[in-house]
Amino acid sequence: MSITLDEVRHVARLARLELDEAELLAFQGELNSLLGRCQELQSIDVGELSPRTHAVALTNVLADDTPTQGLDQSLALRGAAVTRAGLFVVPTIIEE
Image (tube, rainbow, N blue to C red; front, side, top):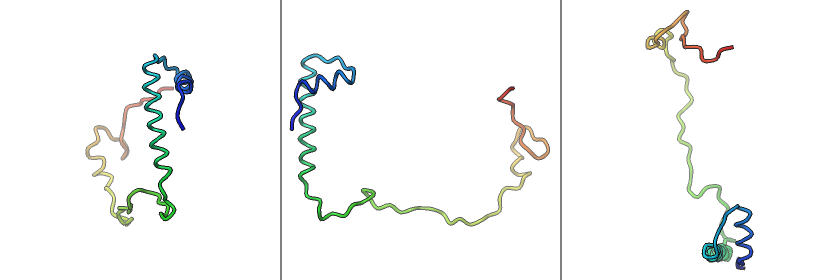
């Protein structure tokens, strides 16, 4: 299978590309080369291979979900510029 010059013109028009004849011929050659590579890949016998979800083996690297003591409120608020009633006070960014 090969791409004709008219097909390259059609695709270029669909992509809204303004190509001169030299560019059309260059793209035709590149597309035909790409199709040749695809045909080579299709000819490979993969009947003996099992399907895989990933190219490499993956393992989850997750820590155990064990509860730990969290920050004390006074320790968490220690670096805040402004606090009130045990809460962070921040500037209003949404006005009504």
